[in-house]
Image 1 (cartoon, rainbow, N blue to C red):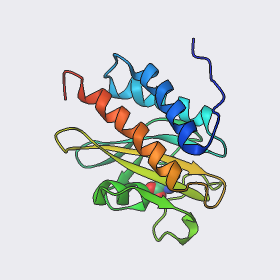
Image 2: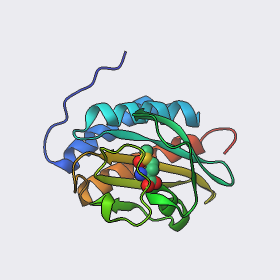
Image 3: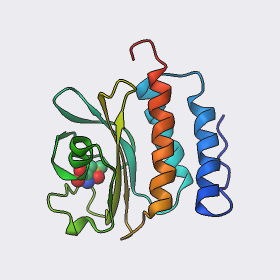
Length: 166
Ligand code: SME
């Protein structure tokens, strides 16, 4: 059974602890849905001030919602649309301090005020999808959050890369 531990220290230290927990959860498992589900649950229950944490997977045409924690979400997002589609198309993490100031932001949960979306690429460079976090607070995500969550995203893509279908 998983026991959540309280994260301590400064943000980089907290993210190092979270990464250790994520390594434990993903260890020996390469299934992309199972790992996405556990990572979303870990992050949602470990970090404060989040209202949505989850994955969108690229189906070869557009992004389709995967495992997440939070309110039901938009199912399909075309590449280039919204914060998620922009991250997927540009290959760049989108750290949005104020979603109302982002042209084309897709409001799945009206409570969302800031958002961090990390694009996910397999080892061969192909687009896997995105890891998306929403907060009800404006400016919730700083550069330390971005670095810590990008490290978690790498653990995820490394784990699924080790699978037989990679
Ligand atoms: N806000 C996102 C859509 C996904 S939800 O946040 C879960 C976007 O603009 O792409």
